[in-house]
Every structure is written in C-alpha cells, then in structure tokens.
Image 1: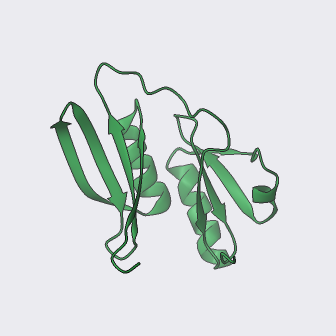
Image 2: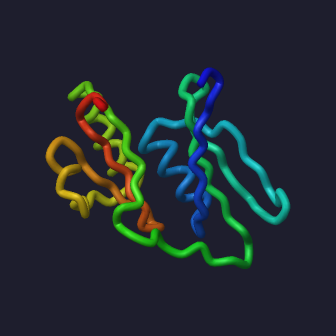
Length: 130
C-alpha cells in the first residue's frame, strides 16, 4: 500500500536511556519527541527513508515494567556481513546485552540483544525471504 508507514510503540520506564541505546545501537535518528502529550512523554525513532518508526513512551506515575516474554522481538535483516558485524558491535557499545535467543532459529545467522526493559532486538545476517 503506497504511503503506508508502520509504527511500533511500546512503553518504557527508561525513556532517555532507551532513546540513546536504540539511536546509537541501530543508527536510527530521533524523528520527533513530545512532552506531556495527554500525560505521555515520548520519542519516535527511525529514518526519513524507511517506512517504519519505533516509538517509546513513558507515562509519569505509571510503571511500564519488563517485556512480558523473551519472544517480544524487533528483527532487522542486515545482509552485508561487514555491516552486520559493525551493527552488532554498535549494539553492545550502546549498552544492549547480548543474549541467547529463546527461539534457537535466531541464533543460527543472527544475534539477539536485550534492552533494560527486557525487550529484544535480533540482528539477522541475511536477506528476508518469504
């Protein structure tokens, strides 16, 4: 569908830290930020070229907690081996923790990283194929 943009949104209790980690680890840019928008603060990350955004929000006075399971994943396919290695190093340098995936499939050609909220990002060293 032309013009379609996907935004994945989730809460966090660590908005500033999460914003910095995802910006530095994945090379995303801050596209927008908001304060006290109907009681929520947030950051929208992405790139102007890609049709997806990641939004992190916090609601002062409410505890977001940790990811409900180890299978709450964002998966990015990075086909170039050198770029994949560099991106994996960036994830660790940004403060993500390398973990084994709950689903062993992701450990075959990818690496899984966990943020302070327990949410996981997989960097898959392959092209997505259906």
